[in-house]
Image (cartoon, rainbow, N blue to C red; front, side):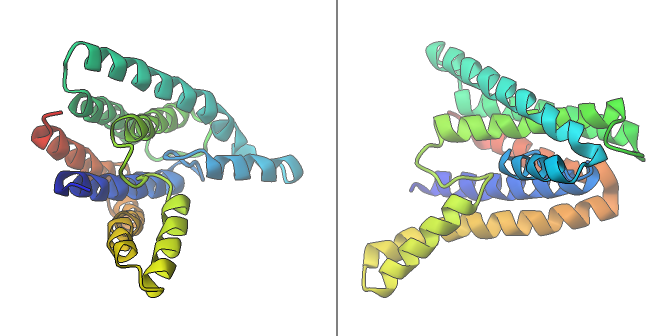
Length: 218
């Protein structure tokens, strides 16, 4: 993996963990970076009714729509020889900044069903759906940056092979360990960021996206 891709993977994994954790705390248990956790919460609600289930239901169509939007935009940017990855970062930045603004305006949120609470969750989910989309389309060879299950599974496999004497597996271990650790750090700082700054804590991942857009030429 090229050095630039490694740095991108680390930064995006940090961003994914940070936003998902901050959103989970601030938005009454809503996962914004991936849908797996929301599936689990919906399943629980079928046997243990929960008042805050509506945002989990709404996030699915929102996630799907923004993945589709990102796909169509990336195709357009590639066909017109525009920097698809940089523009994807900027699209995610706009959505995340909009989510930040809505969250700050709506604070303090009393429950998950306030219109501004729902809008904040949908915007943040749209931002992270965009990351999921361009991660697959433009960074396909890099480790996943929003869901760590596959990364951890592959990391253990590579570590096992490395212990069996496979030198190449050890190199792959190092490449996989970086985004996993970055995601974990992002989760920790996302929690403390919300406790310290509320929704304004989303300024940090916004700054990360600004930096990545500035240095990216593709």
